[in-house]
Image 1 (tube, helix red, strand yellow):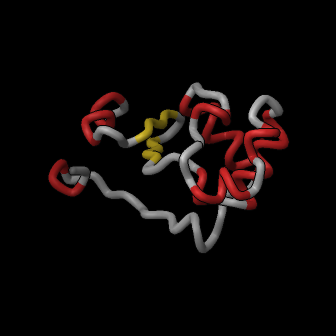
Image 2: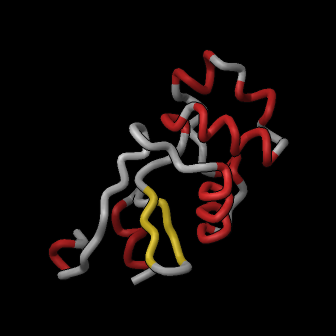
Image 3: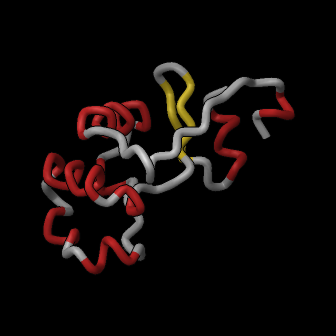
Length: 96
């Protein structure tokens, strides 16, 4: 979708190189969402590691997101100081 619009982008392999807690905090700020709003609660890592116990503790949850990056909602598209979750893909148009 971005290629079709001629927009350059970078794909970040967050499983291989998880974002730091501070990077995750910044992403949440750009999304204007709390950490518990960008996690995948049905993900195996979420269930197997009792992450629900940290759901209301922002810092602890960000740490778990760094430790278990598969629980992070994806894809997240960031352009400058704005970001959206790319599901459905049309959400991208909200920040272009």
